[in-house]
Image (cartoon, rainbow, N blue to C red; front, side, top):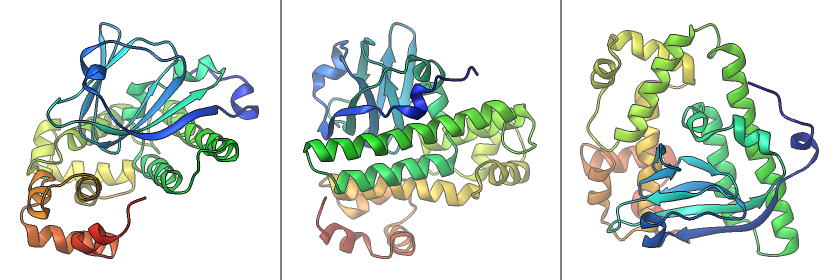
Length: 275
């Protein structure tokens, strides 16, 4: 991967808008483009980003997508279910960044980088104001998030993987993680993922933990809880419906795991003020 210019280090992107947006159906059906770069953070719903005629990327809650300024694209999503995202429009004269940090690369972010970027965006979502100072502050934080993406992807590229794991094994683990990200709402198991990857369950368990620093089941549970939390806050679905939609075997199990992870029950979480 080619290096990028000093502009990346010396100049922050300039945020123009920072808002939560319910996507209109026109974005799904008609190709469009923006005069600004766009960072999309999916809050609720599923979408497929179409770039040009051939490139397409699937995204679910917790995923990130980058769209360079002037790039024709279409945001396809189920029209009856809707799509809710955190959208950041920004200026940044750094074309080499978008050549290297592609949406295909963002799909392969490590769990640690993904979680940290999510944490920072969620913090900003609740602690900013639409003023000149607020946008300047957001710009600095966006710079740090883009740097997180860059460092993660550059590290993978320079190592040919994480640690001393051979590159083919790393690619297999990336495929497994993507499989989990796309199918966590189904009752999938370690055995199912191992069969998908064509490897043994014990080997998958060991290598997945080595690659991401978290166990297979812990990652799957965290992914389900992340989606459930967004649905609790941003939909009118009942707790039982959310539990089923996010892959939990029963409501009681969902409530128990949610409380262990967030410190409150789903009901109490609903009672806290939204930001």
